Length: 139
Image (cartoon, rainbow, N blue to C red):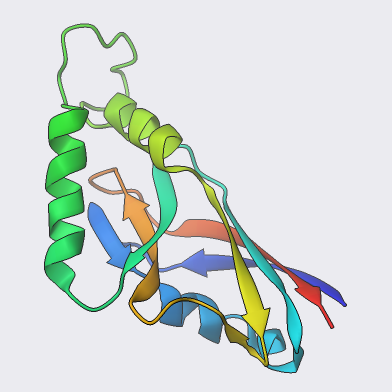
């Protein structure tokens, strides 16, 4: 079985956001998969996807503070500045973290570890609704 759909995530503020439940609820087809893979592809260049800590929200805040220090706004060497001071840093952060994930599916659910969740890493102050292409392969 192959299934593909586009999911629109609700708009979020800048930061690292746990979106596991939003992704799973947008894919009722997962329930029929005994073994397979879910591939998620974010169709944007200023946000990212990641898998990390799902229980303690301070981890997401620490990620946001770290990436902002690692890739600062208003660096004098940035030329791409017409779309705002956070735009070029957002592109770099997106490339560093990546725009896709592949997650095993087993008995209708994601095989994430106990403390793992899917993050939307929003790097713009107002990125708007983000589109994710979800492809399920399995039997």
